[in-house]
Length: 128
Image (tube, rainbow, N blue to C red; front, side):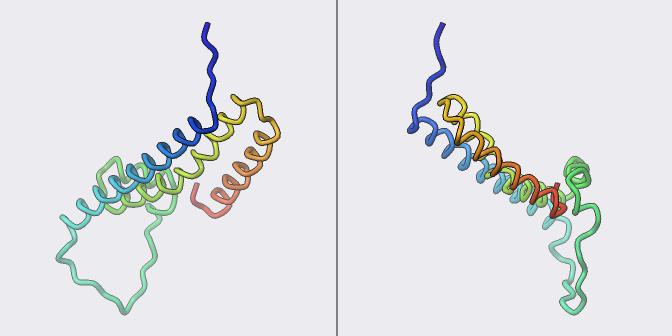
């Protein structure tokens, strides 16, 4: 039976790949949403005199996912931004796993606290 061993360098490489992949995925999703949005709305005149906030369909995760599933450009752009926000959160979660594999339980606890603060700030701000 083989034991799962990860040294610090290997974990750093994996985390770097996670961050790179998350940013590239987020950019691809935003570009897709922008292409869809611009293909439908590029010629609409813009009114800079009146401020209009985002629609309710772009303020919650379930509504964004539903809109993206229906190929609404703005919803897909918002989904890309959510992927971008989720990328460092995933990095922290992966770090917990890495520290647990290394049996560095002090850092597991510290990183769990950091993850809790991140999640609390996201839920408290209305993103989640």
